[in-house]
Amino acid sequence: RKEVEQDPGPFNVPEGATVAFNCTYSNSASQSFFWYRQDCRKEPKLLMSVYSSGNEDGRFTAQLNRASQYISLLIRDSKLSDSATYLCVVPGGGNKLTFGTGTQLKVEL
Amino acid sequence: GAVVSQHPSWVICKSGTSVKIECRSLDFQATTMFWYRQFPKQSLMLMATSNEGSKATYEQGVEKDKFLINHASLTLSTLTVTSAHPEDSSFYICSAPRGQGRTYEQYFGPGTRLTVT
Image 1: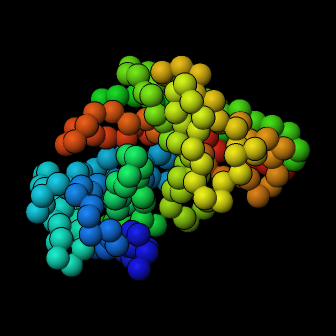
Image 2 (image 1 turned 45 degrees about the horizontal axis):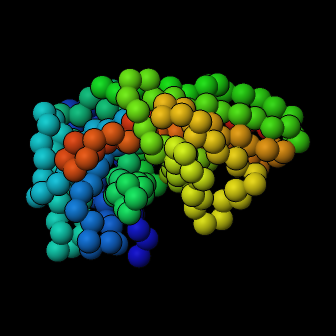
Image 3 (image 1 turned 180 degrees about the vertical axis):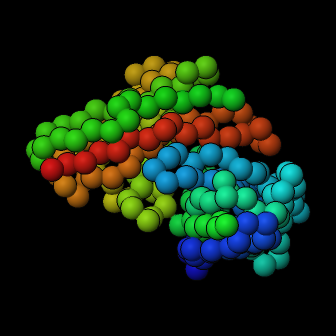
């Protein structure tokens, strides 16, 4: 199993839809997780941190399932501006971050 | 929030030349900075950890003599791509961490797009 694995997509959804992405990780000892958003040709920006079972911030909800070693990101009422690549990130030793390959989301009219 | 700058934003150079990229933490000090590389349609891959006052630590498969890292101060790290070749063309991004535990976050620079012709 890869350290961090994501479905690359792309996921094409209509505006207003609810969409969810999953990310699986291999290190069962990982305690914290992050979802980053990366726009084309830009740097990643932190979207959400996940430390316990989950986190919610407006239209975005992250859930953690430690038993199955996956994290999900749910986006409700998706907007055109949500179109981006969403990166699942797992910290490792020495504060290093391991990035998933990212899931591309395209929100359409 | 914290800001990390990176210069230049993009650079085009000829094969065989060397290119230096700067990464600065603008409003906080960073004893550690990270350098990543991202090829098209791929994720960020950590190249090396830059340590202020000591040698950088490189990830497996990254040539330390080709990618020279110097952490000159608590706010500046530089990456020099020596004798660049077309296969070195990529998006290079630095990051600087801040905080601990639940306040920990890595702040990314805007990236440098390198094209070697």
